[in-house]
Length: 465
Image (cartoon, rainbow, N blue to C red; front, top):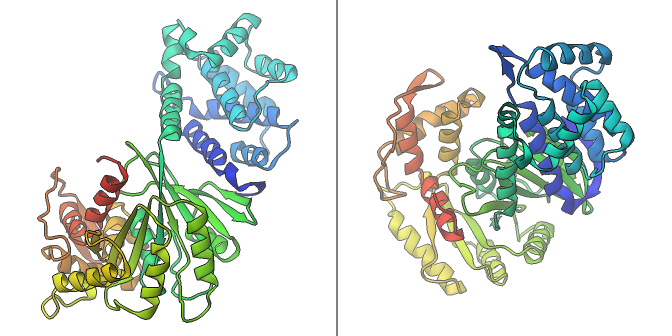
């Protein structure tokens, strides 16, 4: 769902927190004697939250109202009657207490910290609370440690665990990585490979100048995001797709997204990847200015420079590498993309890496800089297949999958390491008319070079597997 918004850019983290909490609440399961009572709980939550938001304004509040309306045409009295009959009276596990806590937490995330007396009256009346029990519900909402009733305490477990987990995530240090490249290096394909899906548009032409930032969140169910123009958020989305992202990419200054970056964990760090517009120094210089302004104004912990393994040592490349060196980022990681296009029977990958290393050392980079040859195209297709998204492949991609699989199933030229799988999963995955085992696709993914790079990113920035 997309909603228009008008908030300051720096409020995006608060927006994401509320959206994540919304997904958690609406994804809970409540049952009694094998009967699913979730829909009645959601009715209560949605109706009451909307009632309390009627007296408040604001773009994010509007998002909350829209997101929580299950059926705008339903009879409210009928919904409450169902709630009373099923959730409260027919259920010995009284979920009303955790419901009040979740309502108050949602309001708190919307910067509504004080419950009005009329709101308290509405909640107590519609949930059939006695004065004493409603006072207890408010007390439990403030301090879950005061709950003595074991059944009520049990109903709070998921709520408390989610809040604790998200608080830990919020307190985890963010490490920022800027991704830069000249045109036609496959940079967007590389970022899509990190995401494990085809989210970002391929930008092979100098048509847009949008910065795209992706924050890693291991528990993300969907990709969520905000669109920024003139330092203000003008739209938010809770289930981002390529249509919306393409639209934002053509009109926004900055897209900020949150999703799960494959194979990179939130154990010690939160990785934020910032994809900058592809630069063509020989043509329009606007992209270069936007990229360098963003990277200089936002301190990067590392820069990933994506080069086209087929076209190394160009004048444009040398100019961009010199500009990036001036930023003084603690680390620069070099990716030689499209490495699968190199005929290693005629050209030595080792020699290509040595020549590139000489080039960057001459510019001023450390002689021990990390250089990773990879195939983003192959890695992206392999990850999508492993996620069950092979049905999204085009006819060309289905054909490419087979040939890339054959190339990487045994070829370790890019990694020089054997594949070691910690699990034995012979599940079959169908791509087009061909069938592959999950283990074999994982082996091919490892040999594509991306897994080694992902492990290095975590290691370099302080994360642990």
